Image (tube, rainbow, N blue to C red):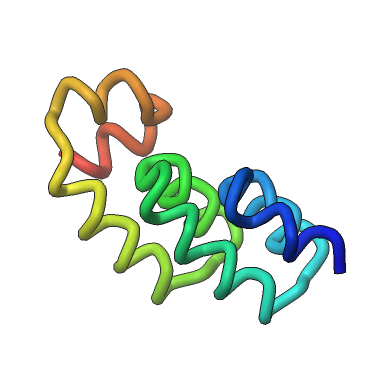
Length: 83
């Protein structure tokens, strides 16, 4: 699968694709990279996809980031939830 090969360079995009098209193995694999690369975006994607476990993990990663970074990267709704 070509998407799997793109994970090292584009984990968030592959994660979004996997959620949208329902590839559970790819969701898990790309989700790990997305959490490391862009925890706030991974949080939003996981929340939209109803992925409770990944939401919890992404929220933990996001909490480690600064409030300023959260404000700049989250939608207003997600920022309100995060704060």
